Length: 296
Image 1: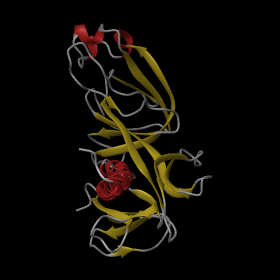
Image 2: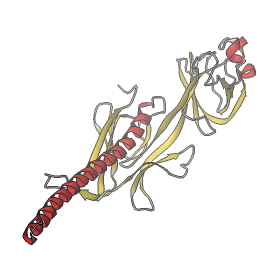
Image 3: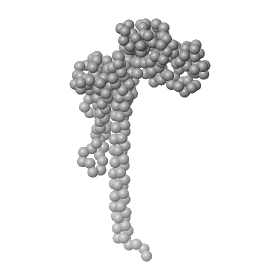
Image 4: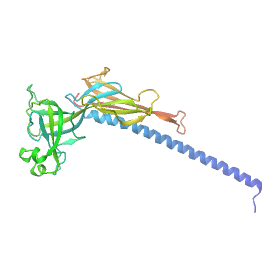
């Protein structure tokens, strides 16, 4: 039997109603998915910035590796870039460190990045000019890579014959001023680099967490986290507390910082509304509290 005109019209109206409901349902789900995706993306970027700074701060320790400049949106400190041990008793201005990769699998050197001129070297000695064991500090003047068989030979007693004959090269560091310590082979060595993290606005008018290396004066800034949108000024701030838990509010060199709070707040470029929520999601925040080592 053929359908009447009325039946066709009713069928079309019902189909349009069902289609409209289905489209509305899909649109709601797409909006929800976009809102959740944007929320996860923003939270991930906030955590990235907080994690980078927290990891750096957890690696610093005395002497002189504390926060040297403390401001609301910038801080400078000595970042630990590596640790090692002396191959032989150091000369006044030169030390040699074993390779970071040895045939035996032993790990005597570990570098985040290779040492460079302008970094600082700290050597632990059993005695110092003051008569007390401790760290002596000097500035790296130059770095050379030498054959391990000559720079860190097996006869020195630190490496095995197999390790000393390996293809990896030892690190030879020249430094000034001279370091006077009673240090022998196996004495701990640390390499640190003065760095500056600060909040700045890029050419795209969005905010970034930036990094600078500061051997004498700070170099060009490089973004390490971001971008961040903010409707109320800088989205990142730092708070400092002494070992007694008292807030440190003075900008500039700070000797008694025992804890740093990292506060990251940012907004969405476009507000998102989840189904069932009367207020759109427009911002998120991450707060990390980092207690510095050897302060308590």
